[in-house]
Image 1 (cartoon, rainbow, N blue to C red):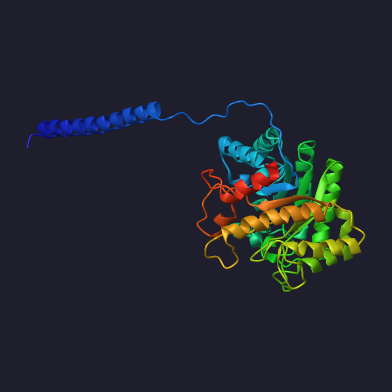
Image 2: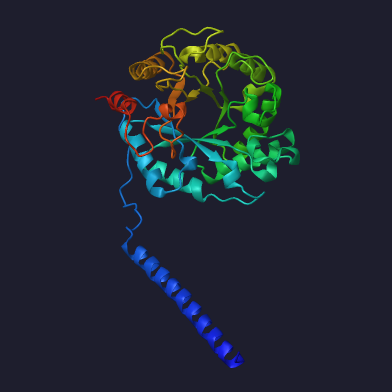
Length: 381
């Protein structure tokens, strides 16, 4: 066979392959260019004047889930609907793991966006600070599932973060909840924590935050309602008593309380062995017995759930009735309670579990009946 002829044929084959591939690349590039040209532009936030909450009942408050929201438009729309419902205040989680991704390096971009948007709507922000970054978790618990794992060796680092947050948002965010539900082992990454150890954390946070911003209000507690007494959870009354016994009363300016109605109506009376909405009154008795009867209180999580099959849920009509009864009763009976904050307003994602039935607004911003009824009450319509 003639080598030249073989080389010639090989060259033709290469040329054909190259042109074919080049043609594919060219068509792909043209298609991509057309897609870019015809796709709709991203939604933009149009400038609007600062807003004021119109409410007849400023006790009304909701827990938002903006820590998982990525677009300014969704953040703004959520907060606009909160204001239009007549809620004066939001509770929102700000993640330490996001805001201080490396020790001593702060990225405030996401919290800046949320706080600026809330202030634009005239809303007060109660900031809950939690979730431990990888650098602050001991190596033996570096697994991502232990995002709440915080040992005493890192209490001062957390306190430094809280102080940095308090300083940055002085004049914008006054209320801070350090940690969450400290009477549950789950909230410590399944570490069993005593009231005295929680007081150690609270003391470090209180001193650092007040040094950074003397006007800050530290909300201690955020206690989970439970009657359990085990390594996994401690009865909220007993935990609060232990907090005072360890000298913790000096290290919080107000108490945060979680109180869910479960399957009982709002006006069901409290009892030591019962989980219901008015269980918080047992905690008020503990405060009064320790000379804190006039200290402000914030119910930072509460609600009824109307899932059709969850064992702890209630019918939608009972959810509405209980929610409104809770607002009316608390506003009238307990003036030291500044806000009643419902879990939760809206989630960025659909959970496809009973959790979706706590929401006041769906993922695609459709108000549920509970939104409309609370709006009528809060706005005085």
